[in-house]
Image (cartoon, rainbow, N blue to C red; front, side, top):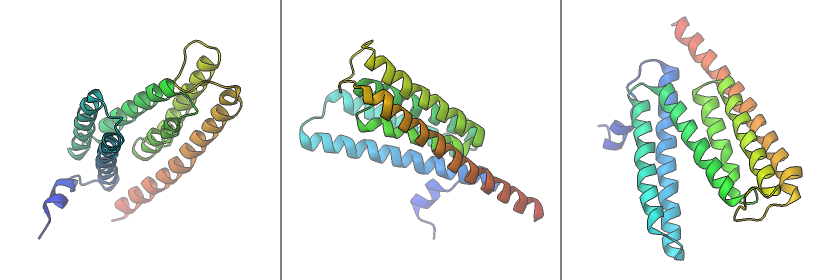
Amino acid sequence: MTSPLRKITAVPIAEPVARGQAALLLAVSVGLVTAVWLLIFTWLISGDLEGATVMAGLVFSGVVLGLGALARSGRVRLAAGLMVGLLTLLIALDSASYGLAAPGAAAFVLPVVLAACCLGFGWGMAVAVVCATAVWAIAWATYAGWYAAYDPATLSHLTFNAPFYTVILLLTAVIVGAWSRYLVNLLTWQGAKE
């Protein structure tokens, strides 16, 4: 007998690569929603929770779960592209608000990995370049004094943080993209062989 959870998360797509990518998007959707609500619960306990945060969490959860459902219905590339775009935008806004000294900028790796896995090597590299560009723009804008992030800008954001994030993002795109390309080719070859 199949559990209700397994029925909900089962991906009714025949093609193995698309089925795997849809399952990955479902897992990411559930993981992101779980992470958001764990953060909200943490802020509730610490006394830092604001009502707007709860509303933003509800909206974010609805959008992300909707993208997971879109992937499950077979629109995997569309769901992946929208998820990558949403995550890139939200992480860029958060990183711009708090600056590169805050840990949120490390989350740029998430859309890079997702793009490399679900959209391919080229898209993974493109998203890595976009995210690295955002990191450099944030570092330059805060250091030049064009705006003030919550954490003050220092020269090390330009000389260490931005170059470091750039290397990490590009390496992540290469590693995950190359492995994803190999798996797609393997699964496609296995499917053609049968």
